[in-house]
Length: 485
Image 1 (cartoon, rainbow, N blue to C red):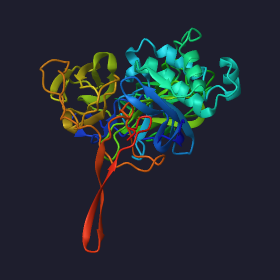
Image 2: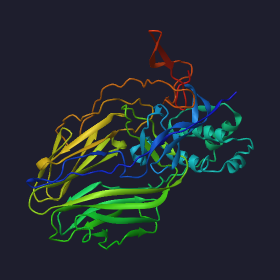
Image 3: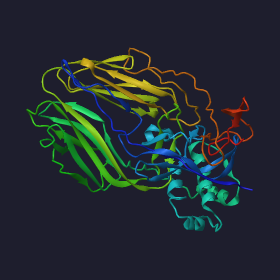
C-alpha cells in the first residue's frame, strides 16, 4: 500500500548589497560580503518544512519520497519546486534561504538534457491542470500525489541519471509519458524575474557610470535614482537616450543602463533601483545559501510560474581628483570550475589589487579578471583588497555538478602568481547527521539514501527521571530526499 504524505520546502529573502570604493589617497568605504552565485537580486525564498508526493524506488538507493517542495517568499508567495540534485540533502527544518539563479551557475550548465527537464515542467503537474494531464496520458485515476511523484521521477532521469520507479501504475504511466517520444525538449532558458548587475560601479562626475545590465521577464520595469544629487542624475540607455521612470515592452536581453552624473557634482554616492510586478517562470533554478548550521541544501527547479513583486538595487560612486578608482564584481562560472572576479579601475593611476592570494595590476581605464578555482560543493570566501583600504568579499557555494557530497569550511584560494587561481581545498565535511522529527514534520531530507540501512542520527535529549538520566537516540527517517528507517 502506498503511503501518501504531504510536505513542503524553501523560502527566499532578498539581500541588498553594500559596496566599497577607494580613490587616490582617501578611503571611501569598507567592504561587504557579496554573493557571487546570485545573478543580482531576483526572487529569494525560505524552504518550508513540508513536501507533497509519494514514495518511489530508486535503483541502487532504495525507497525515497518524490514530489514537490515549497519555498516561501518574504511577501508570502509559495513557490513549488522539484529536486534536480538527487544526492545532495535538503534540510527542511533549517529555514535555509534560496535564491533565483541562472542555469550557468548550476548543474544545468553542462547538462545536455536540460531542454527535456524544461519540457517536463511545461507539460506536467502543477503547470498543467490535473484534468488535462489525465487526458494526455489516458488515465482518469491520476491523483495530484501521483502527478507530483511521476513528474519528479521523470526529472531525475534527466537531471541526475537516476532510474526511479513509482509504486503505483498511475504515477508510472505519467513518468513514461514525460520521458517518452513526446518529450522533444524546450531549449530556451526562462528569463529571470529581475536582475541588475553589477551590484556597484565607480567613476568620475562628468561621465557615464556603468553599464548596469538589466534582465527581466516583466513587461515594464520601474527605475528610480536615490542618494546624492539624485535630482540631477539622469538614467541613460546604451544609445545615450534618457530613460524617464520606466522601461516598457518586453525587456531585451542584457539591456544596458548608465547613470549620467553632471560635471562638477561634488563627490558622492547614488543608487539605481529597479522594480517590477512580473512572474518568476517555471524552469528557473533556485540555489541554497548556507543555513545557520553551515549546511548547503540541494538545488531546486521551479515547477510552475507564479506572480511576484521583485526589486533590485545597484550602487554608483563618483569622486574627483587623481588616483586609482577601484571596484570589483564576481560571477560563478561552472564551465570553468570556479568564480571569475573582475576588477575595474576607472581612475587615472594604476592599481595593485589582491584577489584571494593573487595580485593583479589594473591600468587606468582598464579591467582585469581572475578565475578562482573552487572545489565542487565547497563554500568559498574570496577577499578583494585594493588601494587605500578598498575591500570586498565574495561568498557562496560552488554547486555545479550532481552526485557530489557538500564540503564544510570556506575555501581560500592559494597563491599561484598567475591571473588564474589553482584549485582550492576545503576541510572534509562528514555526511549530514540530524535528529529526525515525526513523519511529515521535517528534519533532514536526504535524497537518495537507502531505505535498507537504518541510520542512528544522534542524541535526541536527556531526560531526568527519578534522579536518573535517559538518553534517547532517534533514527533518521527518509523523505524525498530523506532516508527511510
